[in-house]
Image (cartoon, rainbow, N blue to C red):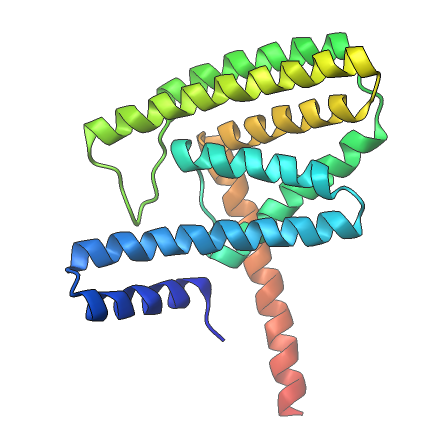
Length: 226
């Protein structure tokens, strides 16, 4: 069974042989494939787990907000694609469950949204894009483009959140407040991953997942030996 890394490398190597690409172009393709498979795996798992727990739409909103924002801003990385997908499920599904169970006040939501937007703009402007150590961003032009894209995307998210609140006031459908809260949370999590605190948190979760998976793998191998 291929890991995401191995599958991406195999496809990129095959393309290099077929199309006579050089090492730099092959490396770019491999990284792009890895990112595509990683995001796809995360979204599929979020949809499955969210569907089972009856919060699929809410969880997917959080997941898409994070994934799209991450494309421009970068952020902390887990050691493996599967671990990153598991973290994606945790930060998408658990908050979605909480938001569907609590009473949300529109005035507080607008206040929180304003604070989230202000803090996010400041952090994103100063830190984004946070690149992958395996694929550092060196071009000043690309850095400026990604930073600008991050700020624009943040603004779009905030407009969407306010639109959801406005629709709620017209329809009194609480779902729209939940959707707005999901957008706020997705933005907040992604901005957190740009910071050193976010990196440390992701590393802690990543280490725990590695230990859990290693422990289960050890038990499985022991049973096979017996």
